[in-house]
Image (cartoon, rainbow, N blue to C red; front, side, top):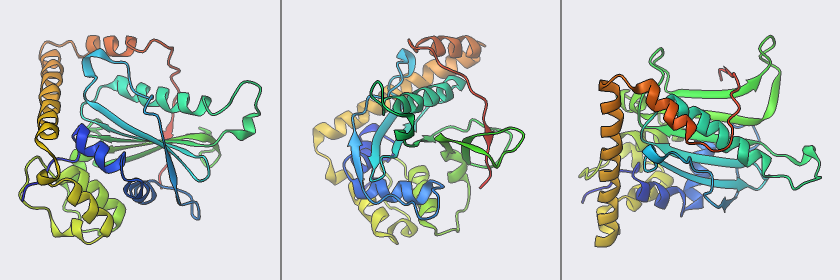
Length: 265
């Protein structure tokens, strides 16, 4: 028995884009939601919030939904990272927030938007923390918040590097995404202790995919390899800043840069 990698486009979408029960479990256990405000049901939304970045069009996957309280959630898997992608996350979440209202409607109808980004590269080398939660806060009085947009960035390599003894379901979900590799012949027993992760594990079995799907799965990795080559060649040639500038210009609409302070949970 062999398993596929959950970070691949096809497996990620099959787990979270086809099984609302699994997406609800992931969000409820990973997001720092307020007490008493767990997600009870979701409705999938069109996946229109995708970055228009020609150089990195395959490295990004997302699933969008809204819950029973009309809160919106954008869950994405980011295989490669540049500084410009944080602007992309901000842009997509802001766009989702704005599009809630028709012209002339009251602002009080707006509901929060949460952007959750699983990143397959380490981008914050100044800390060992892998979970980064951002809110819009008053700089002088951080306990005063402007509600509406929240952002969570998770560095999966840091999760994988830890010996995770915590059996909390949220931690296990992140370990599941970080640790399982392409064609692993077994999955850690810790991922089979919860029915949600057991179901997600079954979805990853190679035997659950037909030959055409497996071919598409492999082609996705080929596309990622090409984009990684572009990435590392740019680094070797000292063109990282130039590359990031090109990526930033790929967004046709203007991006508003805001400063955030991390709110420690």
